[in-house]
Image (cartoon, rainbow, N blue to C red; front, side):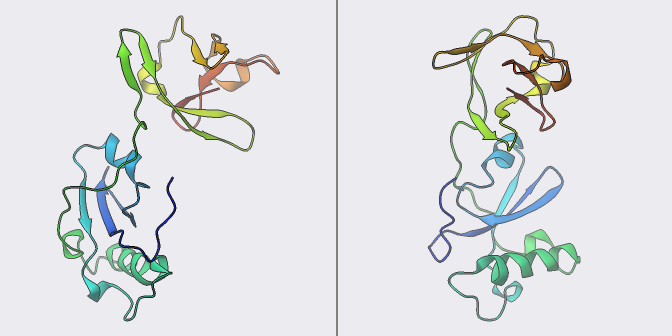
Length: 169
């Protein structure tokens, strides 16, 4: 993700998606939730009555985000009270896999966890019935798939349905 931009001109935003509220800077950090929930509503947090009285230029989490979140969580304000709806927010590219041809998808690595598991952006739910498949990256091809991690042989390279809800390697 891009640097946070604290103190810059990036906007503080509130996103309503998946029956939840998300508060963050408009730096792309909410891209995944906004791209997977098309009916999301995003507002700029401009109601200064919700902020601390004199917000710093370097601690928006404390001075803007936390007070706004606390008031929303306590039910003292509604989402509509934070500010106007934004039509354009910063979104990072390539978080959703691209179906480039029949039976061929292009994806990216979302993360590599502390155990060395590679978490892709392929949602497990879309790929539940994998019979034959391969995942290719540079000179490596993975063509073994197990329904869960414990079925795979030790020290083997294979794909499986990870606990994150995505295909993992």
